[in-house]
Image (cartoon, rainbow, N blue to C red; front, side, top):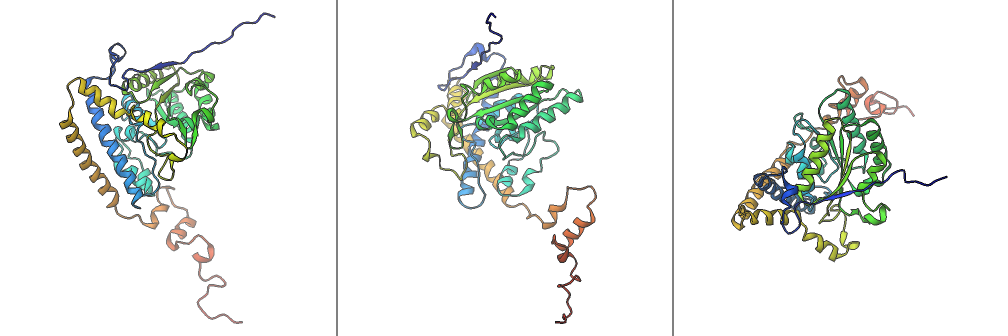
Length: 374
């Protein structure tokens, strides 16, 4: 029998703004204006300062474990900017603060989340997003389901779900991808490939040469982009969302980036990462390259940088104040917002703050107040 090739594929890579701030004007056409870049850069300055302050809050014992977003701001911000605020749905992991803030989430909600206050997960009605997802990969299933609902309702809305390179080794990832591809739901799978699945390097936790190629098996358009380049991230995400809105189904984006900090404040990346690797990626910092670009256009200088940093400091101070001065939650709160009408069993638990029947009914044997006969 003759042999023949039944399928061939390729993965394209997109970079528009390089690490030295040089822009490919042809590829940048119809993407971000200089004014938009300046505005987004100012936001990155704020979000980077927020990240640094959150780290200090944890180190000073004022907050629990925290995963820094440092180095990945352009990936979250560029993709979030491409989505329609109040219409498209963001389904995040836990390193997408920039996108969530851009879509209206009050900044102190993130601090409340990591302080262990569930009110940080009570997303305001005007914000089209789910709370942060700590379990690796589970949120992709939710995003697929939400996108399926949009399709069934014939709404021109999409979802973007974020996850790391390590999550693509989870079963939930493959189930979500298969479901989304089969039903052609309007969902963009956005992988922030920051090179490390906690302490496991990308080349160890997957044999794929790229993360992007995993989407080919599920019939999705896929692309790899420079995740520290807002132009490239914005263009790839915008194109994927437009395709989805027109009925083109799901897409996959691999944003190649790097976490410049530890996995979380409970981690010490110096134990497993080569300092030279970290130093090389620090030169690719998204804040550095976008500032270089603005400076080359005469739109930024040291004075503007100082003003932006002062503004960021003031904003973040107010955010921390809002998180730390919030009224303490009541124990009764854990019973609210679960049932439309609270069952009698839970009413007794709320009134007695006890779950056992003996605690709820002191007249039972062994808890009577009158002396017992021996």
